[in-house]
Length: 518
Figure (tube, rainbow, N blue to C red):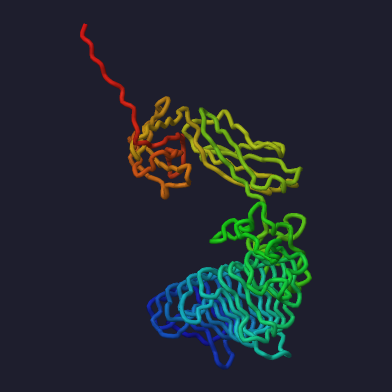
């Protein structure tokens, strides 16, 4: 669309679509400097082998841009000195999502890159004669190769590439050999990483990794996959603090099952509450850059800015495990019944207390304090029926919120009653309020079910008519029990609910009807 060659310029808020090229801030003579390109959207470019966003100069910032559906182009191409590419979303380009070429003192931070499936389609590439590069906080998935970094085959050129706190769902490759100075700390690699023996001064610590993983300094990694050569007979060992399984019958290493390490290896890369990666890492502060060397503020924290360590030691991978609080609320007559769970009770400090704030749109905030740590339930009384309450529960540690969750709930004098009768592959539902509310119900209904065999109704059935009091579920399996939940919805939020169990069947008992005259 346009090209700029000047200094001290901000390019902001443009929508660039269906042009031959996108936005360029570039100078072959190196006169472009102090340029910021932010909050732009670039899509559907027509040029072959072009760039959606291209920068080359000194002191360049590319921030919070969106590049999508440029299926013949590179997403963001950058060169120069002191270049920062951060907080961008790049999707569906035919070539590299983010490409650094010959940059000195550059940062690739907190970007999301996905659906890169073309020729030379790496999610992120750091290419040729780069020096002092930080790659941190990025999430890359559904790409041919998640990330590549390229050596120069020059043993006297120290690259100093730091890869920290990233999620890479696809392969990562060192390309071209001859890298010197690569520090890879606290990343999650779902499909492995490869770097050749020619790479020098490689540090590989605290990673969750699928195969690969060598280096001059290697320790405290958990292996959720192994390559054929990662066996004792080929001279490979997991290194100090490394976590890998062992098959005594086959006398070989076996990977740790990914589902025991991560919440969901197909998309949620946080650590499970009982993950072997928790507290199994080591403090890597000595390998991190000196303060002020980079703009990144996340050193000493995980990809979501949770301070490390949370527990006794650093965790492995990009995500530091912290307990999660789930608050549940059930309405009653001028009452709200609260209960809550924490997914890792054994990790809670014994000094934690619970603090409850609740209010309506028309009332001030009411507070309950001093609830001791083992407590997992509380009842709020003296409330107003038919008014929405916002209830926040905080786990307090040293007078500061430590865990938090919030729910909305409306007390009511009525209860919802759901009944179910079985049919042939069906369940006949009926329901009502007891007692009938003084104000007629004006919301919607939502029905969901799950069978004992694991069949889940997705999405739930949405009924927009408030006066409906019956529904038939069809396509069910006979002889299988179903748990059916009905929710009365107000303002798109669950208000009242009830649950029943029912088992469809094609077998019925018929009782004879006998009529006798008098």
